[in-house]
Amino acid sequence: MDTYHQLTSVKITTREAKRLTGIVRSSADRDRRCPTPSRPARRAPANALTAAEREQVLQLLNSAQFVDAAPAQIYAALLDQGVYVGSIATMYRLLREHEQVRDRRRQARHPARTRPELVADAPGQVYSWDITKLAGPVKGVYYDAYVMIDIYSRYIVGVRVHSRESGPLAESMMHEVFDAHGVPQVVHADRGTSMTSKPVADLLEDLNVTRSHSRPKTSNDNPYSEAWFKTLKYAPVFPARFASLADARAFMTDFVTWYNHAHRHSGIGLHTPADVHNGRHHQVRAGREDTLAAARAAHPERFGADRPLPRILDLPDQAWINRPDQQTQPELQAA
Image (tube, rainbow, N blue to C red; front, side):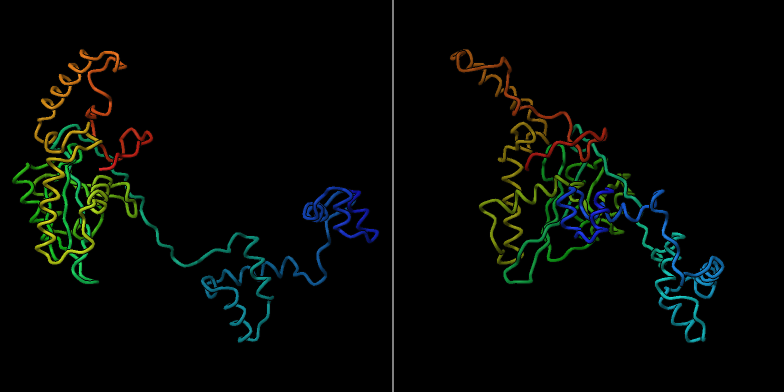
């Protein structure tokens, strides 16, 4: 470093000094400003404020009159009063030295939202619901599809299509769902206006159902509903637009019937949601085991591991939203 400074002191350019010594200019400049026995600390400028003047300016900045004002405002106000104590830059420098340079406005403080952690090991325990938009016959016209799903069986327990979104309509759907499929322990949803509406809240409270909500702007907190909406809208039969509200209702009824009773879901051992929801999956599994056992007996050379069924046909013991043990949650398989 001393060689670098010696070269620059005899009018060698900093670029050439860098090439000769391998020291970058920023490092050399930083070293030049650091005091050493051979280079004592730089003396204060002759025009610097004295300690007493600095204290006077700081007290003025923190006075009741100016404590909430910016230095530029204080500077102008003092000039209008015929007073000059220092420049705007000097005021900022003093405030910075005392760690007082910050936004003095009241800041919005959002409380930390609780991470929803829900587990279901049987149907009828946890329902998840949401609302999605269906495009109507012309641009700007949409219908609202209310969909409620059992997270363990993936069974669609309720679907309604209306021309608008509202809490009373959501409450009406829940009444019908609970009458048909029973009252769950938990109902989970995001924080939409219908989901947090008073009619829905009152209904769930009257039935002693725990209300659970996603954290703001966290779609992963409602994965089952979001995954199902993707399954719906990426289906080859899903139309670009619906001709009418009746058309949308008919389509949703047919699609949900197919999904519940014919779609073999990869997340529940390739069973249909209806089989799992109604407890028929045990008989289905037994039939699959018998079929594979017969095939194994006929051609043992075509089978590997001695398992009754491949792992893909295993029904998970639990379904969850944010596993409670906070281990890394595997991605939920597509609906």
